[in-house]
Figure 1: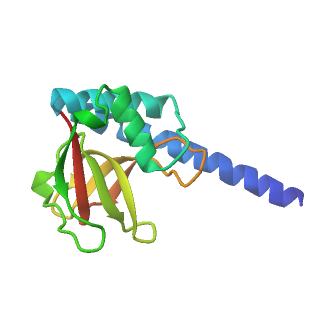
Figure 2: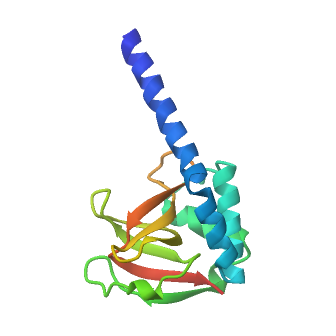
Amino acid sequence: MLKFIFSLILLLTLSVVARQNSYTKYQQFVLRAEAKATAPARKVMQTVRHMVEQKVVIRGACWDYLDTAFTRAGYPRGKRSIIHKGSKGNGPYAPASKIRVGDWLYYINHSYHNIEHSGLFVGWTNYKRRQGLIMSYAGEGRVEPARYKVYDLSHVYHIMRAN
């Protein structure tokens, strides 16, 4: 029993360290993206970055986290534009050229059961392969802060932007 508890504590500690390091690992990438972003996108990116740094947890899903972040940045629902609208199953999927820094993307999460997910686009890590850095919030009732992670963005079906 003691081994089990020790293993569980170790696993939880490693999970927290991995999430903390996600920002550290991508910090320069995030800061460069902020510097190049439009004024509204920069404000959203900075707000999200501060939420990540402060390990803010929002009860709810990925959508709730980003809705809160956009609102805190001064872009409530009435100050957002839909740039691309498709559906999870049938698309049409957005061309990579339509995606900008600071966009709120809905996409098929190929790394987690091909479910729908949303996140804040930071920048392309490999444009040709459609891999991009996303500020991602797990949601699903988990009490975990957001993180930065590279995702396959080949099936983005909705793009929203602060305006």
